[in-house]
Length: 124
Image (cartoon, rainbow, N blue to C red; front, side, top):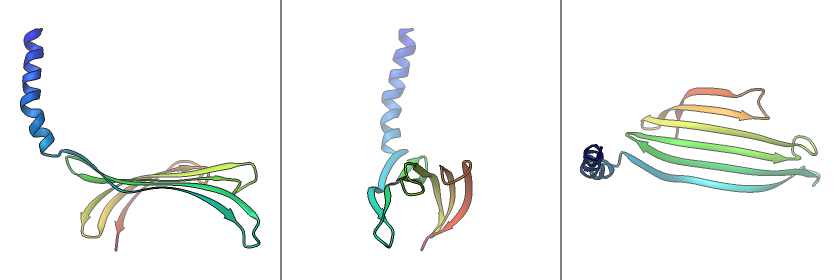
């Protein structure tokens, strides 16, 4: 048993530093925002509040992906006394300059049931 543990420790000491130095795992913050809005109509009536969460981070597990999380939590905006929410969880893989493959999962009270979106994105 001790030989097995020592062998595992030996391989970890040999390979782990080179594995970490190759930057197989990495995370970069692109844009992380939390915003609180007070909403009003044109006649200055209260239209509730919105808490908006936008998290866009790039991560690497062997290759680079961008993880996007967007969310809105609205209180009294759709209906007095009701809190609504909307979240998008996206995974983006750049393919060529300006083009990327995109997957998003949409959940919330604004949609009847969760939606999966697969697409091609052009960024300019």
